[in-house]
Length: 471
Image (cartoon, rainbow, N blue to C red; front, side, top):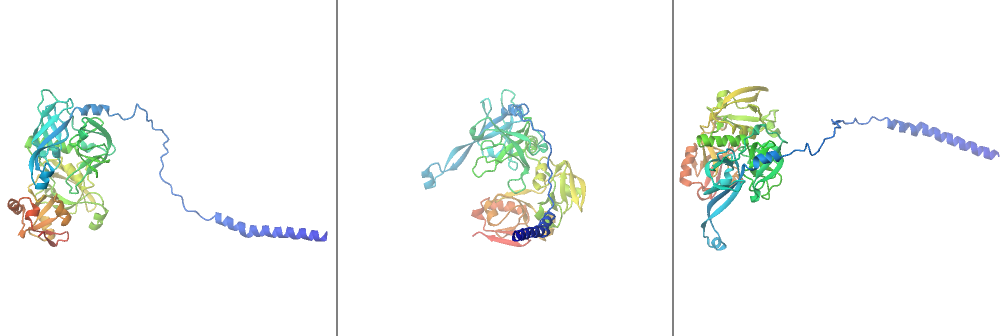
């Protein structure tokens, strides 16, 4: 019995010791661990609006009225041209060439009851004969009134016995990203086709030459839609469908339209003056981004940085200076060069615009009277060239050369890197002082680069002269 009591006592004592040890050491550690400060929780803005969106049929967007207003005003354009080349395999084998008719098709938009039609320049380029098929299946011959290859706009005229259905221009400057639009045209010769989408972006430049300012949409556009209408939900014309971005030649989600304000101004100029009147601001420079701003040692990452102001230009007369950052023109915000060129494409010489610039951290608004371009541009070797502004000559300490404003010569771009802003100083060892010298070379050599040009010298971005020999 005594042994039993001793065993019980030892067991109880062991249990007490174990429990005390747990309380003293283990449980204390657990409590300490639970009290360790935790990382602070991140809170993100959250909408607490629990109102359900009513997607009933009654309030769903309908484009029936807009389509009905537009579809009869969109026409089918047929372009017949004469081309020279091999027709059969034997012609190709023996180098024979013969002339034959080639037919192209596209779309157009009637913009007046008396038969004026707007389309793309590339739809009717080189045409010997143009015919228009209306939505009621009537086919009429069309006269080419005028074109503007720069904006890819052309104006046609047909004569009908009655007043024709037409569409009215809308204000493309007021178009918002996300706004519903319809594309109406004749893709793959499927006449009177309507597709829907939204405005995906504004002021798109597809060339990198800062010569375009397209509206981008995800409304389906395919070959044959070119020259057709892009309209808003009211049926107002806000763009002329012009291009698609595709690796297959067919629509993959992106299409582009000339804004209606640019198209309207072009056709009005053609009708009134016979050509396009361009209002010139008179500045050159770069669009800002983080990289450019870092190079310029400035904090601003949006806007157009003015590097040169041309003599006798509206900008010069108004007091715009090198180093200014253009932030706005009239009510149009400028975040990149395409915004600037797009808005100026709707203006004429002597128009007055309000230019807001950022200078030394302060914004200033200057009234600028747009000037007519006195700096002539000449096309040579598929490049657009103009005289060098005096500020650029001073910057690089040079006395000769012409400035490349556009380069469509893919070979010169790929092999030499000639692009917008490149200065050409010599061609075939002939010094180039102005575009007058370019005109002389053009008369002597024509436009055949590979046949006649042996050497070109340029000024690189560091102000150093480089020469390239091709034979």
